[in-house]
Image (cartoon, rainbow, N blue to C red):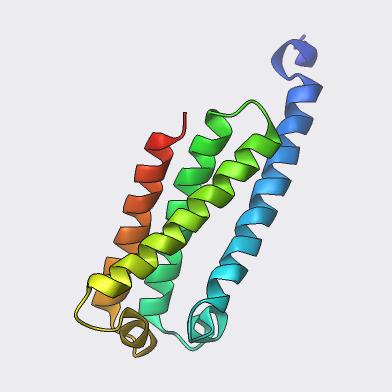
Length: 138
């Protein structure tokens, strides 16, 4: 007979669920905050089928996911992990605007117009920042 208490520790399961709820909620909140900094509404553009917005939004989610994983893996508390997630998010936001400054075109306008190449490029920048930040979280 299987002894489930040897396989699954209820405290670990509950802690995992708590981390999941908090980090998922935080990620959702941060995606909403990011939308406040763009001249278009991500959700409206996604519903309208703007693939460029979809690509850049996916890149933000992946980048934030990478930061979230490192934050959880390298912190002993949920609060510590949440703080690093927010720091990583702020660095992603700064990176987005630095990238906007160094490009010869207006990224936000190109994405709003549906320029998929720019959407993918911005997604790549978000993923890069996610890896760079996650590597620095120790």
